[in-house]
Image 1 (cartoon, helix red, strand yellow):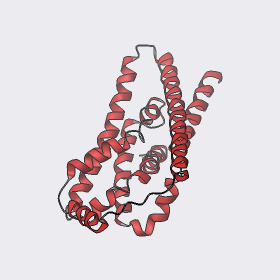
Image 2 (image 1 turned 60 degrees about the vertical axis):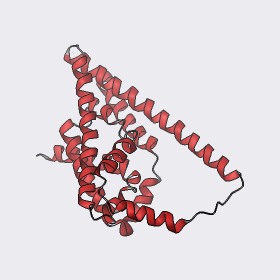
Image 3 (image 1 turned 90 degrees about the vertical axis):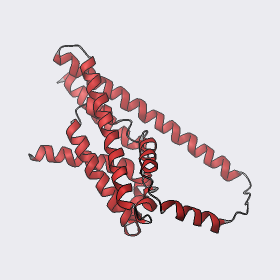
Length: 220
């Protein structure tokens, strides 16, 4: 592996880690409080890797579906990636605006406190973590990260990463996320910092890079 491939692999790992780490907080009790933590961690890795493989299959299918000569095909793939990334960036930006507006409306309403038996709820949650729930972990991973990785096919179409680099980076990032969950008390500031980075900002960065690559290919 040369330095260029190592750099792309590192970039893929950081991309997956930064994109999904803030939404993996729910995994902490399944890994730390359950005696089946290893099983839950394995289910999490399999589901996360499965999502990346699905992105790879989707991008490969799109590439094979374009029956053009190599030069035109490369241009159209880059164009699709650019349009897809910018569309997702605007979509998640609009979604964040709606979330802020909804949050502002809730804060303006009078707070009504309902008395509940918090002790029973806590006990029930603790008991639920004591049983093996790999399907629950896999489902939460799959449906929880669908929107987070929705722009990965565009990165593959734009040749930012290769399918191998994305899958390997996903596996490494998944292992790092499990390690962070085990050390959550020490790395909580990192999780809070990543949580403040909006998804649309990350996608906008990649959309800008893909747009610059497309313009360079056209005019140079």
